[in-house]
Length: 152
Image (cartoon, rainbow, N blue to C red; front, side, top):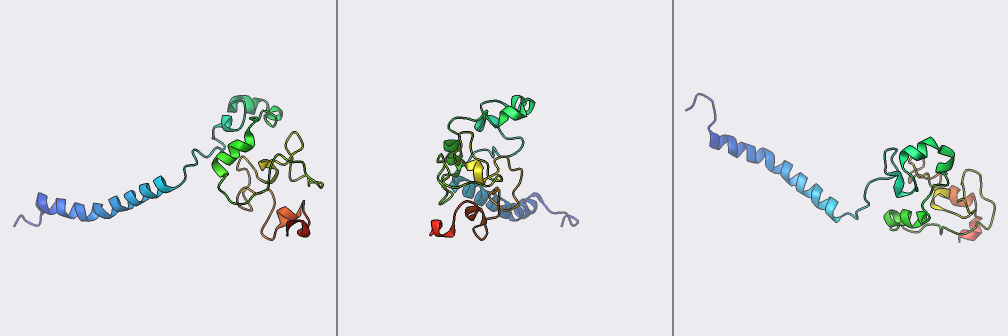
């Protein structure tokens, strides 16, 4: 006996039993990430890359807050769809509304419906999930512009 101390083989054997589950969890996590559709960095965060949607960098946009709303990439809707195109059925964008739209749902600069009409784009509010501007649990968001009969 070694006075209660374990030899190198015993320590290595115990380490394998302790580390094996951790390695397995890590491998499963890596596999799940590899199989998930890549969406890239979350540009909706405050420290996200502004140029993903804007034509200027964060410094310029923060210095000219009023201009930031118009300093948008011309293909903004396509950029949204590049990460969110597989989210399921959604409202068409780039069209003019047929009825009046509540002030809480801002239209694009050209007066058309955009992703930002229904969604916050900077993650500033996610009270209703999916960065929705209005509660849609019972169709409230959709019914703020549409009649129920329009949707059936």
